[in-house]
Each structure stands twice: as C-alpha cells, then as structure tokens.
Amino acid sequence: MENKEIIESLQRKFSASILDVSAQFGDDTLLIDKAALLDLVQFLKAKPYEFSMLLDLTCVDYPDKDDRFEMVYHFLSLSQNLRIRVKAGVSETDLTIDSLAGIWKNANWLEREIFDMFGISFNNHPDMRRLFMYAGFEGHPLRKDYPLRKQQPCIPLRNSDVD
Amino acid sequence: MLTRIQKEAQPESLLINMGPSHPAMHGTIRIMLELDGEVVRNSEVEVGYLHRGFEKICENKTYFSLLPYTDRLNYVSPLINNLGYVMTMEKMLGIEVPERAQYIRVIMSEMSRVSDHLTALAAMTMECGAFTVFLYYIKAREEIWNFIEQTAGARMTTSYIRIGGVKTDIHPDFEPLMEKAIVMTRDVLKDVSGLLDKNKIWIDRTRDVAVASPETAINYGFTGPCLRASGVSYDVRKAHPYLVYDQLNWEVPLGEKGDNYDRYLVRMKEMEQSLRIIEQAAAKMPKATSSADLIAKGMEPAEAIKTSRSQKVDAAIQLSPNLEGSEKRSYPDIVSGKYSVPPKEDTYTNIEGLINHFKFFMRGHGIRPPKGEVYFSVEGGNGELGYYIVSDGTDKPYRLHLRAPCFHIVSALEELIQGHYIADIIPTFGSTNMIGGELDR
Image (tube, rainbow over all chains, first blue to last red; front, side, top):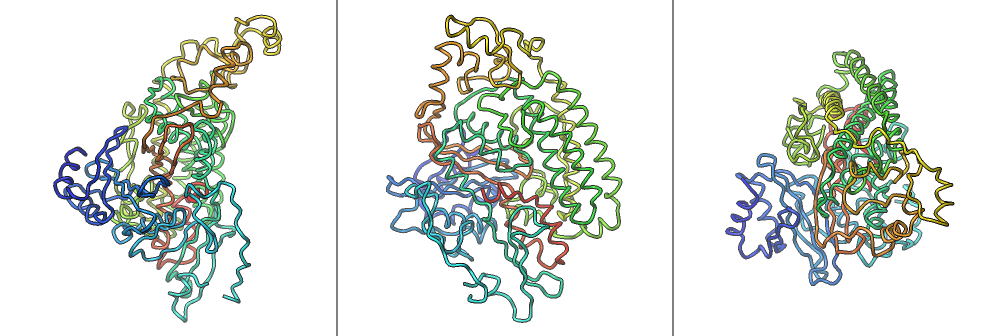
C-alpha cells in the first residue's frame, strides 16, 4: 500500500475538509480544516491503514497568514511502514484545537509543549499547563514576535509553606 | 499554587519530592511521588530544568552555524545527532553523498550508538548496585571515544558530520584503534553478560518491573530499544533505510515482555549488532583515491602564507589531516556539493579561495535550501531522531523542530513506575535513558 492510495480514500471520505494535498521532498502532506481533525486521525488510526503511532506534533508560526499558526502532525503506520503529515491551521482569533490526548497518550506532553511555546490551548486536554517554562512565565517563546533576548520579570520565591 | 499531584493525592498518603537535583537522577528532572509506604501510588514528572531554547536559537542561526548545537542535544551520541540534522538538510538540498563518506558515517554513528547504550546501561546497572559493571562499561566507552577523537578531533562535541559529507577523511591509522575498541567492547559485553544475565539479584530487581506492553509502547510513541524491548520490530535503519544500512548484514533484536530486564537485554544485543555493522562497513569501505598521501607533503603553512603575499601559491601545503581543508585532493571522496567550507589552504593563499570563503559565511549567502518543509529521521541511540525543518528560502531555518525520542519515553514514566517500589524508580528511569539535553532541548 502506498500513501497515494490512502490520500485518495481520505479525499473521498473527507472531501470537504481536505484543503490541500502536496508531496514536497517526498513527504506526503494533507492540509485539513481543524474541525475535522479528530475524525480524520481516528480514520487514519483504524484499520486498514493503522497509523498507530503519533510520531511528532508541533506548530509553526506564520504571523502574516490568515491562519497564523499551523499545527503539524506526523503519523507512522507500523504495519504499512508509511509516514504521513497532517497540517491544520489555527487562527489568532480562535486559539484552540481539539486535543489528541484521548487517542495518543504522548500527545499529552506534546500539546503541553505547544501550549507553552505558542499559546494554543487544546480542547479536552486533561492537564493544560506549561511544560518547560514555569507558571509565572510571560509570553510564548517560539512565537515569531517573541524577541530572542527578551528578559523575564522576576517572580516571587516559591515557598511551600505559603502555598 | 498546587501541583496536580497535590490536588489528586489521598489524605493518608505521603508526598515526597525526588529531584531536580537528586544524586541518583542523571539529568535534572523532578518526580513528585505519592507514596503508600514504599509503593508509588501516583506520580508527576516535571521537566524543563535544562531548557535552553534550542529551537529558538536555531531560528536565529544559519544552517551551517547551528550544527554544533545539535551535538549538545544527546551528548552521549553526538554524531548521530549531527547525522540526523545533516541528512535532513541533504534531503532538502538534494545532495548525493560520496560512497566513502557514507561508510564513514555508518562507522561513526554505530560507534556512537554503542557508546550511548554503554552509558545508559552503566547508569542503570550502577543504580542497582552493580558498580563493577559500571566501571567495565565506562572502560569500553573510553576506547570508543579514543577512536572517535582520533578522527573527529573531539570526544563528545564533535560536529564531525557535515552537509555533503564529513569534516575530514577518516584517520589513515584508524584500524588499530577501531580494532581495540571492538575487542574491548566485546570483552566487556561477555563479562557483563556473565555477571548479570542470569544473576538472581539482577533478575529480581528488573524482571516484571515497569512493564510496557506493545500497545502502551506504541501509544506513547516509544521508538528505539524501548519499543523493541516490548517486542515491536521497528528500527528506522530497517524500515526506512538510509546510508548503506541496507547493504549490510545485521539483525534487529527484540524483547518479550517490555520490562526493565528486556530493555537491558535489547541494548546488550544491539551493541553486538552495531559492532557487526562497524566491522562490515570498515571492510567494505571504498579506498580513498589518494590515501597514500593523506598527510600532505609540501610547504610549511607559515611559508605558504608568506609566499602568497608576493605570488600565487601552487604547491601543496603541509597541514595535519585533521584540520579542515588540509587535503584538497581527498575531498571528492568524502564531500560533495558546494555546501562545505572551502579548503583553508585556498582561503589563505589566493583571492578566489578567499571570495569563496567569504561568500560561504556572509550573512544572506551560504546554504540556502529551497522553500518548503521536510521531515527526516535516523535511528538515534534512544529511538527515532527526527528533524522537521521549514525553510523560507533564506540562509536561516524558519522553524526547526526536533523529535526527541526520549521525550516520548519519559512522558510514560508516570505510568511505568506506578505500583512499584521507590527503589525501582531509578533503574526504570535509567532504562528509559533520559538525556536532559534532548528532552528539554
């Protein structure tokens, strides 16, 4: 089985939600409407394609685009030995997207990282907190408008007796 | 502010903090534990103590100058990190690497894998009290690092694998040191197998501890030895072959249960396979066209620079083979494309070379891949090490993201240690081979 076949069947099933299909540098990529994300990944995860592993989940910031943020998902099918990339735009006015934490457990941390670095919050995420940065951190470091050498304000010393 | 575990904890249980600066924690990571006697009822892992903003820094560096940062991700197998980044760039730029360089890359990355596994197991066994085994492993790793140092010039932060090939040709006298490293590692593996494989204490400590079923492992995105310990046969070198791995003879060892013992055993077996790969690659490696005169005979460097002030220098210049650009004649064997640093002997002695050098390093020039995005992964010490790069056509990456294999494995730690004793936390943590630089980036 090849990615082409999978993409064709996806296009038949989710024709309204798939906005673009491309294959640059040999990586098959789908750009989808974020509303269809959960249905589409569950379809990919089920038989016969079995994209059972969420390889990677990240985000890219394009300040000039209509949909400022672009979520990028990489899936791996162990049985078909295929990888596929799914992208979904998230606009600045509605910084939310459905969480995959209910389907893949590693999405829990991956989405926390995105929340931390880009400020996108995930619907139905079990534990939406920052992952790498501390609770009083201001801003989202991987956004393009966050300066490289920005200084953070001092936060009060955390004292367990006061908490 | 309350942490999750403080909210969830039952009133009678004991809350205790392990880390971030705990003597047994390799790397700064904090585990908050909810204990029932000595049994872990629930836990919460807090990471980010080593976050250095790798991805943000990369957006502000040129493609060439960010290479040394990749060394510092997984600092026990830096060469594989170099390889992952460099091969992603090559996929984007469409470069074919010379065959000799491919074999050198295979040898170097397998050596790194062995040193990675040795370090992981050394830490894991030491924490179960097997200090002798720790010293054995480190003894073997020392020989491997000697071999790497001979060619790359550095032991850990090598930056040896470059876009288009490797920095310099492999050292002309590499074979004795390679042989020594292989023999030493084989001896150590044999000794350690004898000491641990059927050792009652070791088996009691590791069998059926922190079991990850195949479903759990896949669901958490495990790759590498931890996934294979659960019995899932997935190795990037076999599934999506790169370099010359498909021309070599080797096997993928698998575990049965996915517990700590299997993770130990899979790593032990994998090292054997890596040594096999190294031996085959060294035997099959094409000869350098000019191997006989790898060490340049010719003018002294100082004399050449002095001469270049009055006239053009045509003669070869005497430099050590481990200096960049020392041997122009051996370049076609190990580097292809225009994406390597121009030979230094040209830069210092003639104007064309100087212009090439200037153009390579000047802001806005240098390496400029086409617009687009690319994902490529190699088999790292911990699993699938993937780079996702978005290029906007300039000399800096628009976005660079690393798929860190141990990130996914450590995110399962809470589930793995649940229901086990405190004493089992540290060996479990060791078996996941958490590397701070890679996890926190």
